[in-house]
Amino acid sequence: MTGKPRAQFRLRIRRGDDIALGPGKVDLLEAIARTGSITAAARALRMSYRRAWLLVDTMNRSFTKPVVEAESGGRRGGGTRLTATGADAVRRYRRIEQRASRAGATEMRALLKLVRR
Image (cartoon, rainbow, N blue to C red; front, side):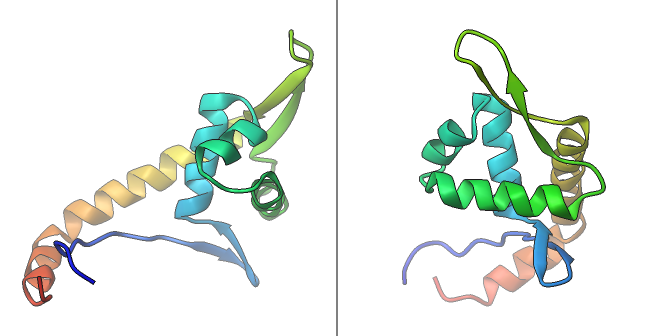
């Protein structure tokens, strides 16, 4: 393994054995918000539709309200959208990441100096 070392904050929220929310799931929610489709979001993230659907299902079961829901109608017969809960979860998750990175920046730089380049 070569390359410049980098630090990355990876928050996961667990509900029992399930990961209710984590970096990959937030990426998926953002892709669904952009594309309006689980299929297109999965394609954009290079994952199977089944995997994306299972991640969405886990999130919907883990939160008090669904984070993603189907939309009906439209020219193509509908799609998928983030609910207010889903949008709020993404916004809060990204805010936590930013704050943690800022709070730990000095220690992360010091730790990275200890890693072989």
